[in-house]
Each structure stands twice: as C-alpha cells, then as structure tokens.
Image (cartoon, rainbow, N blue to C red; front, side, top):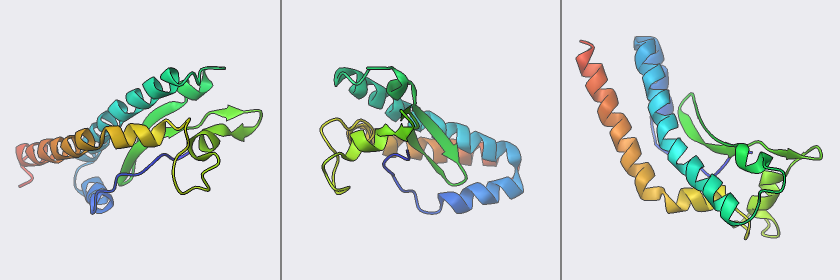
Length: 137
C-alpha cells in the first residue's frame, strides 16, 4: 500500500537529469531520500506497536521506506489472508477522506512534517555539495 505523500516539485525531473549526468549522484539522491523516509517509517512502526497492531507482526515488519524515480515515501505491503490490510487499517470506516483510529502511516507523516521538510533541504544541500565537488559545475 502506498502511504501518504509529501510532494517536492521538480524532484522527478532532477532524478532523471542526474541519471543522465552522473549515476553516482542519482544513487546518492535516492539513498538520501530513503534516509529521510526511514525516520517516518520508524515512527509509523512505533505508532503501530503502541496501538497494539502486532497480531502477526507482518504489519509492523512491512512498514518500509522506499525511493524510486522522483519520489520517496513509506509503505506497508503486509497481506492478511490474501488481501492488503494496511489500507483498511489506514482508512477503515472513513470513506477514504480521512484516516481511521488504527492508522499508522498518515499520522507518522503528519507528526514528522517539519522533519521531512528539513530532511529534503539537507538532501538538496548535500546533493548540491556533491555536484559542485565532482567538478560538474
């Protein structure tokens, strides 16, 4: 299940441009973005444990950060009896408009919004430093 989103305009274009210019910088960008998402994932796992959502353990273990072309985030891909139940836990009885009482991913993003913003700024600063240090400017 894809989790809540925090948008950075132009990130996809930056990721693709780095792929054409310098594969190492692109790999570094994704690693840095994944490290920002890891803090949110850690908080989401903590929220899930505090809400007692540890019946089988796969929900908590399934909460992981990711970084792909132009995006990064946190998702849970846990399955229970053949269906993806993290979506149900996030939005149950809410009609998809807001999160439910057993949500973990959305509250983690909300609680970490300031840290995500600071993390994105650090990513861009470090990427700019790496880009300039590599003699590409």
